[in-house]
Length: 170
Image (cartoon, rainbow, N blue to C red; front, side, top):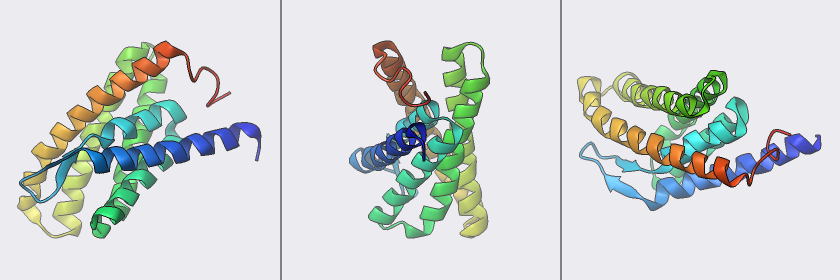
């Protein structure tokens, strides 16, 4: 494994831990039995900093680990896929957009829209909760909005500080 891959793997592990901790530390109970958290800011940050594949791995692992720790094991595989794809979408859109700030916001919004849809589909189809799954959508949209704002602010601070210039991808 070359030095660049080792560096990205270490950053991915650190971001997976940050996703997990951010999700565990700030939790606002939801009327649907789940909770709204700030972990999505770090899910998006994972994609934006690491790119689609390493970012997806970090986001998915961090969120699935949180589900296991919190006793929501049935959600762990879905969270791995849903949050991983959230980071992947955010990274791809941000990377393809000429205007960096707009790309971050557009990627974040699309990624979080997928997150709300993904959890709705999982709850409705796989858990058999049908139309009751609609109750989770507003909370997931609020969580997504918080994630976009927090992730964007964190990413802009990192960009302005130049602390990671050339260290993750090159």
